[in-house]
Image 1 (cartoon, rainbow, N blue to C red):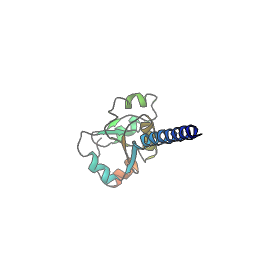
Image 2 (cartoon, rainbow, N blue to C red; image 1 turned 90 degrees about the vertical axis):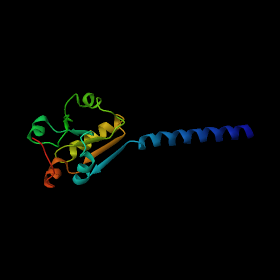
Image 3 (cartoon, helix red, strand yellow; image 1 turned 60 degrees about the vertical axis):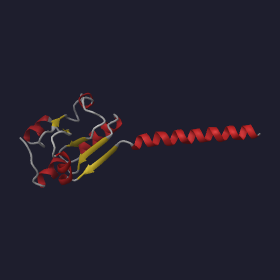
Length: 134
């Protein structure tokens, strides 16, 4: 009886420790929605992975300096995103924040570790009179 109790204790302990371990891995990826002014401060140096997930037509009408256009609705979106470094932060934006939230979810599922999403998108950025490129 003692051995059975000890065995049950060990099995239960292992089950809970495995569950906690997998939960902590899910929490290692974060998506942070950032206000335009704070987003600007983070992307001011041109060495970040800054991705505009709008259509090419929207991108050509105006975009954030040093951003790369990868359309979230393109069938090759994830293939193109896989060329980025998953261990470095990725900064994403769209027109209003909906598509970038969608893109952020996809990036999180793909194993990117730190994702910054521009709150209110390009519209909010423009309202703050922050620098854009055409």
